[in-house]
Amino acid sequence: MLNWAVGSIVPFMLVTIPLVLSPGPDTMLIIRNTLASGKGVGMAAVAGVQLGLMAHLMLALVGISLFVLGFPELYSLLVLLGAVYLTWLGLQSFVQRGRMKLGVGKQVGWRFSTLSAMLTNLLNPKVLVLFFTLLPGFVALDAPIRVEAQLLLLVTVLIVINSLWQGALVVFCDRLSRWLQSPGVNKMLGRVCGVALLVFAVLMIYEHSWR
Image 1 (tube, rainbow, N blue to C red):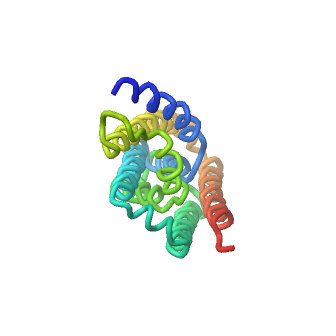
Image 2 (image 1 turned 120 degrees about the vertical axis):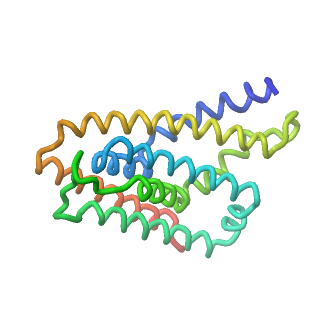
């Protein structure tokens, strides 16, 4: 058990940390929801992302993710759904003339924040690929624990790292929002987050389009 932990978990952490720190749709959604509605809603988005990761693990364990990857048409449909959803989220940042409400007039509730973050993670094909390209490399068939338990431990490590980073991001954005009350800054932030989500949607289609 100790040998597997040193040989698999430690290298997995070293590979995972840069991936977690790199910005993606989850990050942009967490930032937007925190700036729009405060720390509580931002933390709800963080929880939603981790629920999405757990759902990916469950899908992987029962083989559904492998089934999707084995059928290009289904995988392409997943990419399209993810891009459409990110486009919708991005356009939401332009409502009310692109101005976000920071600190007052809660724009997003915690339930919606959790659900939207979970769906964003679930519909991100890169996360799906991660579970079937990265994780298998850290699973040892001759380890004293079952493969399912190894996957659960690895994903737990991923969730802990993800939660620490995204939680710190929420705290930072919440404190930052106290100095971002001017209408001009609010409008700019709304548009920046909206454009970023739209760009991710376009990149998803471009990188995984039918060819």
